[in-house]
Image (cartoon, rainbow, N blue to C red; front, side):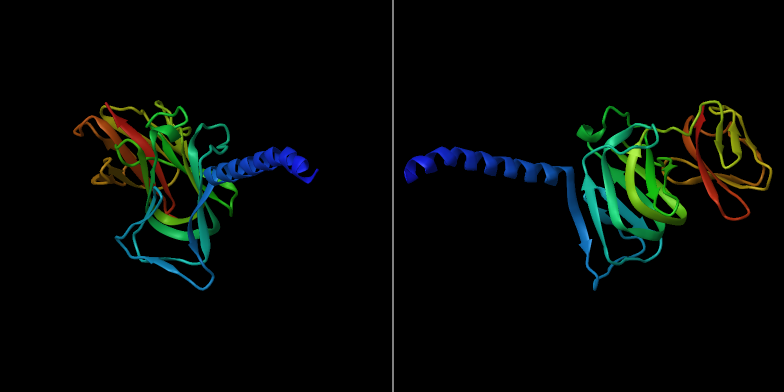
Length: 243
């Protein structure tokens, strides 16, 4: 009787173990812990150095120390208020605060979630509970790069489709850029003074001005980044297309 009972239950036990293993593997695929800095530890990235956390690269402009935190990667798309997102998001359980420098988000074809390579970086700030969009400053495929000259607080990082840009006008914090694309004169509409800097996609400064009317007729055709700094040192970046 004992043997007969055992033989009948054994397949059930095996099935349970298989389901348990499959569930565990699925959870590992859904979210993977990439980096853990313990309560008594600290990780310092020197200025000019790069920390690559499974495709998320942090390149600070000054020495930067990460204290107790955990960085994870989840292979799923997050909600960006209606903006399509790639199937990968990095999350930090204790926010990285006051970061200055460059962040690069590397991705693979399988993570694109039907998006094109024309994408923006999105960073979630728990202080404001909002996603903020930052333009891609490189022309390479399979990576999105953004440079931050104002202190940044990082809770989650992902990549999604650009949703704040228009080919006719661009508006951010009251700043309007037009026409865009442009072959000659680029107009900037804003009620106060601005310091304008124009960069190519290699991050090289090609033009700077305090004027709100910029002549770009001598520039090569292509994509540029216009950085607008106001009197409070707030910076807004715009993607500019030179025809």
